[in-house]
Amino acid sequence: MSPRGILQEVEKYREIITVWEPRNRATMWHASDLCAHCGWCKIYGTPGPFCPRKLDRDKILLSPQGWGPARNIVSFTGGDLYCQTRFYIETFKLIKKEFPDIWIHIETNGYGLTKKNLEELYEAGLDSIWLDMKAFSEDRYYILCGTTNKWILELPAQIVDLGIILEIVLLYIPTIVEVDEFEKFGNLVSSVDRSIPTMILAFFPEYRLTSLRTPSVDEIVQAYRILKSYGLENVKIGNIGVFCRDEECIRKLIEVVGRENIAL
Ligand code: SF4
View 1 (cartoon, rainbow, N blue to C red):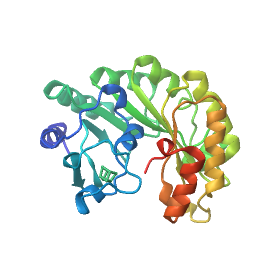
View 2 (view 1 turned 180 degrees about the vertical axis):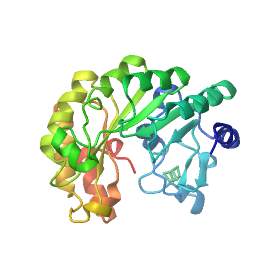
View 3 (view 1 turned 30 degrees about the horizontal axis):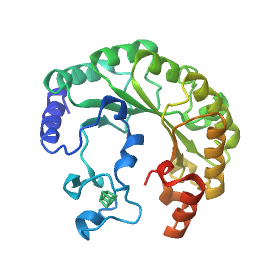
View 4 (view 1 turned 90 degrees about the horizontal axis):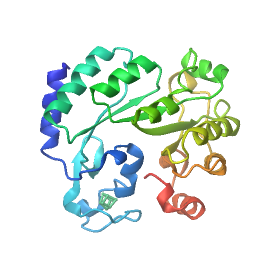
């Protein structure tokens, strides 16, 4: 798609927005405060078992990604080309010029976000970043991504200093990214800002990592507790369906960490 083509999509999307968020909530992390995406209110006319009960049913739409509110955020996900800033700069500028009330969010592993690229994207209108940090230790990062994570570890501080909204994603990958890595991430994030929204996700085996397993509930809870022990104030657990197979498991998890700390 060209930048103008994307602008046209944003224009169409803007027409169906049902929830207007302030800039500091331009994250995926905050979306789970509003809706558990079950669709009950639309299908059965009643809130689902885990509904946060914050939105009227007329705010909920069915999109290709499922049920939920349409928030005033456009997100660039999957296929991470942030080393090619020219395309994004042109696109972000167009969006911001036409629709300054739409927040621009990107999902990235951070590899393309050198300091210069980050500053250019920010100046073009980038509002928020979902930073999937993969692993802290360079050797483990190399196993996963085949390269260094040197400047990725510096990104949380740089992003916060620039005034871009940051959310951090940490994936629990048994045998590669376990509690020792979560300790290091806890230390890193707490040294930047303890209020950074942080999401723990559960790995599921695909492609070249099919020999690995998904994490257990206990492992995920342990990772959560480690991050909390570093004073992180906003930690949520996502991808629940990967390690919880039934409603009873979800209810037990809620008993342990609290409903507000689970992204459904
Ligand atoms: S508002 Fe969201 S969580 Fe609540 S019933 Fe509707 S779709 Fe489900």
